[in-house]
Length: 386
Image (cartoon, rainbow, N blue to C red; front, side, top):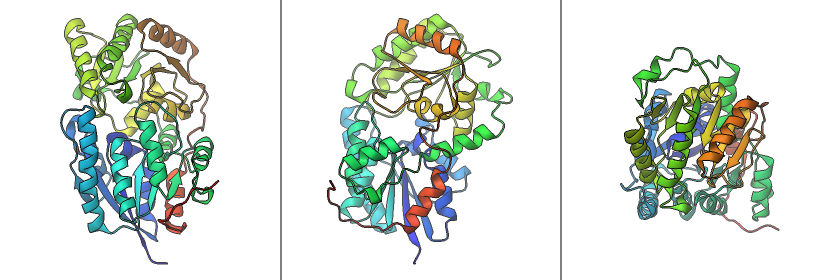
C-alpha cells in the first residue's frame, strides 16, 4: 500500500492540544505522511499564538492560512468562514492530500470540511456526535454530514453519529486525543513547581498559589449574541464576593468576544481586584496542572467537562454554552447569576476532588486514529444508512 498523505488543519489554540498526539502518531506512522496546516486564530498572538507551540514541538508546517476578520461579531464569523473556504481550497489543491482531518466544532472547521468535500477529498472528523449549546452544535453536526471517517470521543457520541445516518463501519470511538496528553501529565509530576511564570506572564494582581485558587475561563455564547458583557459581569461579581486567588483566561475568538473582554476590562478598572490575574493562554501542560491543583474551575469552557472529568476537577459550568454535553460527576451547572455561582463554587470546594472518569477517553486516541487513517477504506461517496 502506498503512503497516504494526511492533511490536518489546526485553527485555534485549543485545537492543537486536542490533536497533538494524533499529529505525533501520524508523523511516526510508516504508511502516513503528515501535512500540517495552521490557520485562523491559531496564527494570532492575541489568542495565544498556537503557532509557537507547534514549531516548538518540531512539526513542519505545510501552509499558513490567515482568515480571521477583525470584529469578533456574527458578520465577521460568517465572512471568516467564507474566506477560509476560498483559501483552504487553494491549499488543498496544492497539497493534494489523500484525506483531510478537521477538528471538533469551531466555525473554521466548517470551511475545512466544505472545501475538502467539494474537492472529493475524504474528510475525517474528530469529536463529532457531541451535544452542546451555541452555533457549535450546528457546525458539529453539519461537519459530521460532510465527513467520511468519524473519530468521536466516546460511545454515546458514536451512537448519535450512527443515528444521524452515518455508516457504522466508518465510526470509530477512539477517545479525545487531548486526553492522551492529560493522562501523560497526570502520570508525571503534576505539581506546578515554581510560580515565577505567574509574574512573567499575564496582567493584573500579583497572586500566589499557596492557598486554594480558582481557574476561570468564559467564552461568548454565539446564539446569545449581545449578552456577553452581562454574562461575564455576573461571573466577575461572584469572584468579587469569593475573593479567592484567581487565574482567569481571556475569551476565544468567537462572535461576542469583544463583549466579554469589555466586561472584564470595565471590572478591572472599577474594582482593581487584588486577587485576579489575567492570561491569554497556557500551554496544555500548564493548564492541566492548574486543573489538577485548583480548588474549582469556573466558566463555560469545554475543558473542565472533557479533560476535567479525567482529572476530577470540581467544576461550576455557567450558562448554556455546554448545554447537553456529556458530563461526569465533577460538574455542577448554574445560570448566569452571581449568587448561584457563589453558592455552587462553595459547594464544590467543600466537596473536593472527584474520582477520575474516562468519559472522553483513556489516553490512547492518537495512535488509534493514525492506524485507522492508514488502513480504513477512503471513499467520498456517501449515503444515509438506516
